[in-house]
Length: 342
Image (cartoon, rainbow, N blue to C red):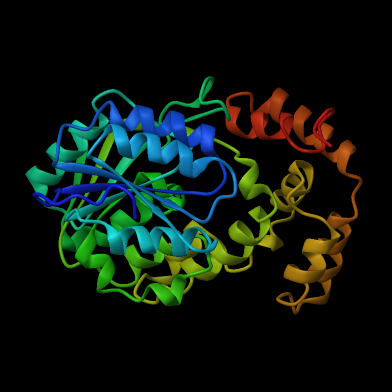
């Protein structure tokens, strides 16, 4: 561990998990470091044994600031494991998970601290805006359609679930009380790449939750690190996670995601268009779970559609009929089946 220093324990730990993205990480850390008010907030970077120059980048930050710590793991353990280790090592009462290529809006740390001190929530959710992969063009200026600061008492937890669960698939939106996390069974959700959602909604919260509706996080969309795993995460792990929450009424879970989302053929065609679905995904992930012969046949047929024509067709449909869906249009344009992306 680099940056071990004694002193007053911080109130908030901002925890970044990273792997071989040294230059993106450098820009993100610079952005966060500029907002740290003092020892009340620490920045902890957990490195999953990167082989690039991440260690050198972080050592330079550790030498510059007593507010920065660097934890280099012995081996790559996956995003769920790395964030778990970061939380266990965190010294703050609250932990704000963050991504290594995203940025904060001005005064974001100040606003989060103020909400934590004012409300003492179990969980705080921070709204964000979506940008392109360089965090330049704004694709969606308000990902969570909530205004102001919304407080969810214990009798409004189903409303909290409905309002935020889809959005917080983005982990950088989540600030959680450290002791709450430690009381819940991480192993049950580890490997889903969505373990933080399992930890929040494993059972009802013992206190209030808060959402800051002002977009304070700038998300860099469509990282290439996720592309090879996107289908499993969103079509297998995600519904499996949501449907594991037995305390949530079935009608609410169904409204979030169907139990078998690959049966939504238009959505499956879109996934084919962006390159997230193919015959290998059908064979290894859909077929073992799909018992209905008709759905097996149709989902296999979608996997065999020529990739470039379907991408162009879907892109044309979005451009003509849904021009406001900038995130999807951007994704289609930047798909690895686009010219120059193969």
